[in-house]
Image (cartoon, rainbow, N blue to C red; front, side, top):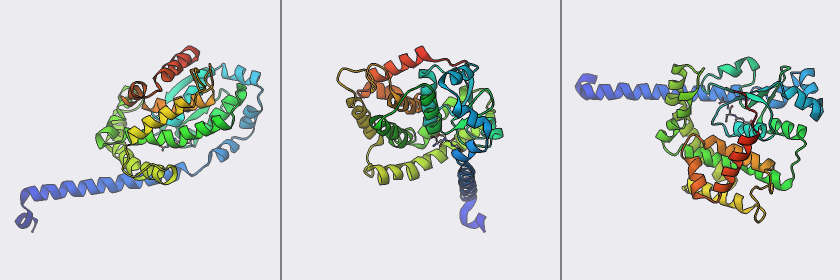
Length: 306
Ligand SMILES: N[C@@H](CCC(=O)N[C@@H](CS)C(=O)NCC(=O)O)C(=O)O
């Protein structure tokens, strides 16, 4: 039947079509399952279930905290995760000694034993693990005596809720961009080659779909991003508004030194540092000098051990 109606090329096309449909359905099932697993436990419950070890961490004085942290914390992250970027900026700025563990984004092998499926995660020498960038940065800021205010909070929310999403849209404009955004993984050791391949073959297309059908919709429905507007132009415009919020003649939002808003905004932008977008923001918006000063300041302060 096939032979007479379709011929050999038709049959080949049919097979490729079926394989693509099966692959798509499989990826969609895995993605939904993963979201479900990620929601299985909240950060608050995860912290509570650690019991006294977590309560002890919260109760540490600034001096005791610095003493414990001096032994080195382990920071689990995906290099391109904007929330992980905020934690990295805080660790660097406050000179908290830390070692980075790059988590395999496909299999998440390195955090499986922890029982919490999302990064960032910060592990303390006594075994306590803090998850969620909001919780981690709040803990670090309070132990370092850094306070927020309403204006900073507004910019910090903008960074997490809007800026991070514009970056996702720009990084996933085409399917090629989505696959290319995972190129950083080639330089990561401890991730098996087959996982790297899967990440590009499956993770890339999934991120493309997420960006176009979820992220764009959220920006439109919740943050007034006009349909069919150019995400890159909007991102650049918003970066200029951020810089315009600085007091006249000051290098940072915080004045002569970065404040918590500077750290969060910079941290979110770190998610784009493996692709040309990061340098484009430097050269095509008012944010160039600020970005360079942030890089210099954090490089001077960092106590990254590996
Ligand atoms: N609200 C969390 C969000 C963290 C989050 O969504 N992390 C993503 C990476 S950007 C993640 O780990 N996703 C789990 C996965 O890929 O399965 C935070 O601020 O830390």
